[in-house]
Each structure stands twice: as C-alpha cells, then as structure tokens.
Amino acid sequence: MADVHLIKEIRVETEDRPGMLEEISGALADNKINIKHIAAYAIEGKAHFMIVSENNEKAYQALRSKGYVASEKEVVLLKLADKVGTLKKVSEKIKAAGINLNYLYGTTCADACDSQLIMSSDDNKRLAQILG
Image (cartoon, rainbow, N blue to C red):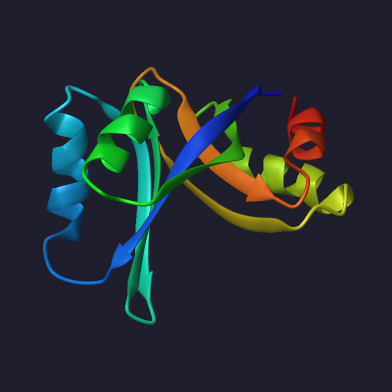
C-alpha cells in the first residue's frame, strides 16, 4: 500500500514567545541542516516543535549547543500517492487495527512526488506493520 519507515523525530519545548520559530529554524540553518518535516504548536505558555531533518543527529546537537532541551521520539513516516481517497484507505486500516493516533502532520504534493505523513501512536511498530 505505502512506503513506511520508523524514524526519529526531534522534539523541543521552549517558552512561547515571538521569534521562537526563527530561533529554532536558525539554529538548524546556521549548521546547514535541512528541515524535512516540522510541526509546532503553543499551549499554556510553552511552544512545542516536532522536527525531522535530513540529519537528526547533527540537528539534535545544534539545538542542544544553543541551550535547547531536545529529545528524540520514534515516529512513523508514511509515504503514499497523492490521490483522492488515499488517506481514507490508510485511516480505515488504522481504525480496523484499533490503533489510536496521538498526532500526525504531513505534506501533500501535486506534482509527481509522494505525500508524506509523520504519525505517532502508542505502538508505532504495530502501526508501521499495519500500514506496510
């Protein structure tokens, strides 16, 4: 059905204030690290960033060297055709397996490339197996 991989995501929690996206993305850009996927949100005075880069080890070190508290988390990377109904088919499999997603974020692509989703559940290995 799809191309599925277990990968690492970098998670950073900071104070929620103007400029945090620039600071986080700047720490990576200054170290020539390309961001492949990013999601961020703020809640209760904290900003939360979830990042997958082309070199997570280097990104992790770059963020830590700037004083950010960073951690890694295993997530599922799902690459799938950018067609109407593809996500519905994926979500049907997830539902049938009784897997509850904690979150997902991703990209679509109207040209000749795959859509990509980052997913997290309480059992990412099983999620990857179901989707693979």
